[in-house]
Length: 137
Image 1 (cartoon, rainbow, N blue to C red):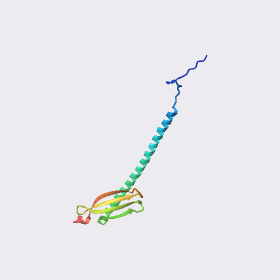
Image 2 (cartoon, rainbow, N blue to C red):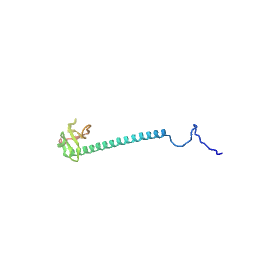
Image 3 (cartoon, helix red, strand yellow):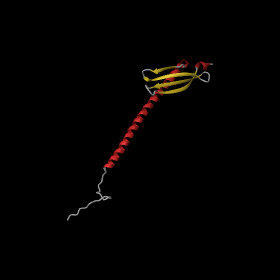
Image 4 (cartoon, helix red, strand yellow):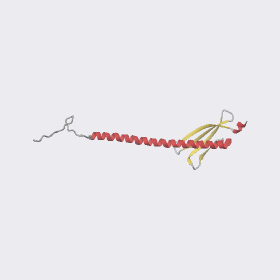
C-alpha cells in the first residue's frame, strides 16, 4: 500500500505558492495609476521649463533694449515701441517715460510682450534714468 502525503494550507485548501488573479489585477491598477501620475508630472515639468526659458529670453531682450537706451542717451527717453527684428519675431517692446519726482530724473518703464493669442505674456522693468541736460546744471 502506497501512502500519499498531502499538503494543506492554513485554511484547509491546497498550499500553492504564487499570486491570485485579484492580487495581480490590484498590482496592475496601482502600477497604471503610478505611471499615469509620472507622465502627467513630466508634462507639467516640460511646460514649466519652456515657460521659464521664455521669461529668461524676455529678460535678456529687455536688458538689451535698456543698453540701447543708455547708449543713445537722453534722445531715447521718449514713449515708443518696437520689436526685436527678425531675430525674435514674437517679442515686442514698449517703453514709457514718466517725469520723476526729482528734477532731472526720469522713470523708464520697459515692457516686453510675447506670444500670440491668449494669454499674452509680458514683463515690465522699471528703472530711473538721469537726464543728461539737467545733470550738467
